[in-house]
Structure formats: C-alpha cells, structure tokens
Length: 226
Image (cartoon, rainbow, N blue to C red; front, top):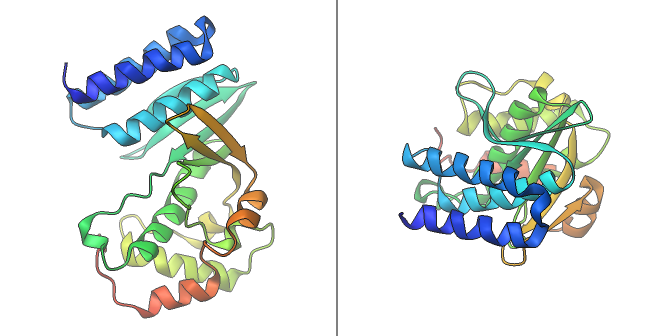
C-alpha cells in the first residue's frame, strides 16, 4: 500500500467514526473508487482527500454520490450527487497553481473557476464549488449577483479565452451560470460549512475580483495559457 492509499484509507476510517454506520458502505465505495483511479495515475492525493470528505458529507445528507463522475468527451465532474430526483455537481478547488502560472496566479485561478462554472453547470440541476478555509475562491463578483451586465460577461469570456481555447467558453454559457452553494471543507476537523453565494460575497468582497480587476488582468501578458 503506497502513501496515497494509506492516506485515503486513514481518512475513510476517520469519516466512518465521524458519521456512523449509516454511510459506511458509501464511504467504502468512494474510497475504492479513488484508489482505483490512483492506480491508473488519474487523481492526486490532496484533491482526492477533499473529495472524500465532501462526498461523505453529502452522503450523510441523503445524497447518492459518485466521485470523478464522467460527463461527456473528456469532462469529469469531481462529485456528482443526486437526491429527490435532482442532481448536483460539486467541483473542488484547492487553489493550487502550477509553476507556469507563478507570475499570474490570480488571473489564472479566476479564469479556471469561471471555466468550471460555465462548462460543468449545464450537466446538473445545481452546480456548487468546494474549497478549504485557507483558499479564497476567485469568483468574479458579477457571477455572485443575480443581475449580470453582458459587457461584464464579455470580459470574463476574454479572460477565459486567454487560458482555455479548446473548447472556448461562449457568452450563452456564462449567462446561464447558476451557483447553488459554496462549501468550505475543513479536512482537519471533517467539518463542511455551506455558504450561499451572497454570503460568500459579503465575507470576501475585498478579496475576490471585480470587473476592474478583470480589466487589469487582461492588460497584462499571458504566461501560462494552454
């Protein structure tokens, strides 16, 4: 058993103690799914541990949960969950940036979260994000408000186009974005705190990008575009 498997197995044991016997079998299913994917070199440990904690939380809330759930083409949802005939995708964001984006981490993370919201949201009734307490999701304020100016959405598209060209993000996808919930995952304590988008905006209004920030990002050179 390698380090990844030991860590995932240890977390599964902790989650069983935390939630009780009612969801033990579902925790085992999620654990086995992650270990099998790791053996084919398709998942990383930090991200997988957060998926497991989030998945156990949803299972305890009565959801049927599938980790690393295939959608279409090459798209794979971190977490797909179903309850009462409705579906929800939860994408886990750790805040990690590669060395290629050392000079533009905020610009890149903003484009990444916009891209995820636009691409994955159409495959479920609800779309949510999850992140650890030490990371501030770079969700542009325009996407956390009910009314969105089309010229503002065009700026978001331009930013996404700098990093993601295949496939591109169209304005219709950006207009259709609906963010249901933001989950704060504390891996150390196994606690998950749900926050409504407006609450997240209020708590982090000085730390997440506004449209003027997007304009500034677009004026700078692109370093780690793919």
